[in-house]
Amino acid sequence: MKSIVHLTANIETVEKYLHSQSWLKTGEKITSTEVPGDGNMNFTLRVKTNRRSFILKQSREYVEKYPQVEAPVTRTLREAEFYGLVSGHSNLKSKMPKLLKVDEQNYVLFLEDLGEATDYTFLYEKGQILNDDELAEIITFAADLHTKLTRQDSKKNLPNRKMRELNHKHIFIYPFLEENGLDLDAVLPGLQKVAEPFKSDENLKGKIEKLGKRYLEEGNSLLHGDYFPGSWLKSTDGIRIIDPEFCFFGEPEFEIGVTIAHLNMANQPEEIVQKALRYYKERAPLDEKLRQQYTAVEIFRRILGLAQLPLTIPLQKRQELLNESFEVLTKADYSELPSAIYHHKNLSIYER
Ligand SMILES: Nc1ncnc2c1ncn2[C@@H]1O[C@H](COP(=O)(O)OP(=O)(O)OP(=O)(O)O)[C@@H](O)[C@H]1O
Ligand SMILES: [Mg+2]
Image (tube, rainbow, N blue to C red; front, side, top):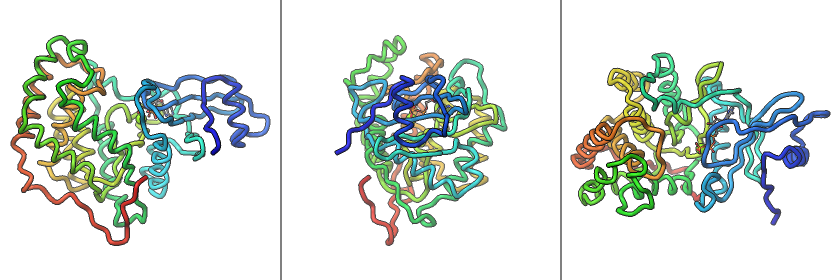
């Protein structure tokens, strides 16, 4: 088996690699490389040449920032499949960087550089409010994605099983373990004590287990899979959506549930949250009860789980959000929800 090239920021290594792929133009020379922005999962690099600049993104068998943590090496290829599916829809495609090349052997994507863009994680800072146009763009992208790219219409399947299983552990399991290796008091003094009653509530855990099973089922809409401020970029040309490595065909309530959870944790005014829901429902159907459950579980996982965010809301606000989430989940009646399983006789669900 051919060994996998290990990309680094070293100009010679990158140039040699790009030559081996024939990805450089005649006379094109690398002038510099740099880290384009915050990222944990993958190796991402901005490459500047005497002609242009572009982004390389390589996935490895582990999480780039935490090499001791395993992760599916094929994840950039799933990301590439998402770009492929979206490429037939100009309004979606135009909101993402162009995927210019893919190296399937070495799990590398060659992406258009959106320039010095920052992601929207600044929304977690005090006093930052999403403006109306931005909100409309973010929600419209999701609604278009969910309605235009369905498994009924697309012959393709994209289970992204391994990434979904990884996400499942982080969302539905680790946050509720008594011992998950995370010292919550180091995140925010007092948080450990706040967490304890939730972690020992069997009713809550039962509900979460059920919701987790739903997340692992196949649904009908293409989801970005990680639709939160870290995947929205503020570029000079407006909002761009990046990083669909957790994509799959699932239920839109998961995606919108996650988005709303982040608007809540970023302390956005209730008016913004309601507007987001209104914008979505004007364009696509949404089961509100199910959406609320996914919002609740995302709030639990981000406040108590390993994938912490730069939240600035105080302990009391975190406690309030957890209490509300607890109410939603423990009162959930699954007999009221629509069936999650999507059946399609022409598509087999295969492992990828
Ligand atoms: N096409 C692009 N143009 C400009 N900047 C980009 C582009 N793609 C990524 N970036 C920058 O690099 C950062 C990391 O990229 P990305 O989120 O795709 O990587 P990741 O390793 O999957 O990150 P995460 O750990 O958050 O999942 C982004 O937040 C952004 O700042
Ligand atoms: Mg990512």
